[in-house]
Length: 138
Image (tube, rainbow, N blue to C red; front, side, top):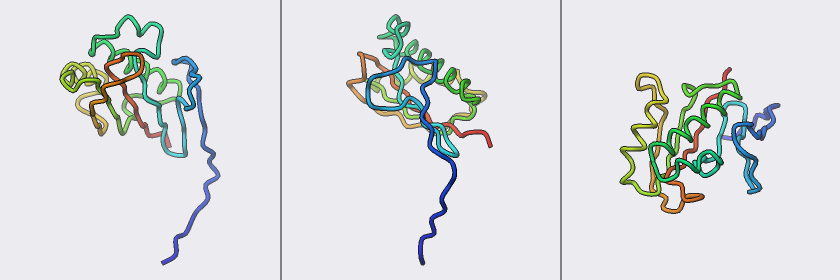
């Protein structure tokens, strides 16, 4: 059976949200296709104000989740639109502290799918990095 390719008129968009500083690294902070917003991984060390919370997993998680919320707000989305999250911890022993802060950002157990892994060397000495994918409004 032949594969039928349907070309979309939607162009991929790359966005620099005002909620995060521009990076000289070769990546886009936000990429949109016709259905989803993909946010690059964020760590507390990405933000000058975030340096004050480095070392406290709960505070780092709150800082990153607040920034994710701000980026989604710029896109006309909310935390309820997140369908997937990837959480990287420098030490999986910090899972409970991250989880306690993370769950505060979602309404009554309406959580996205999530993967949590240990990544021992996160940017800037951070203990938490979070990447999300959110569904765009129809």
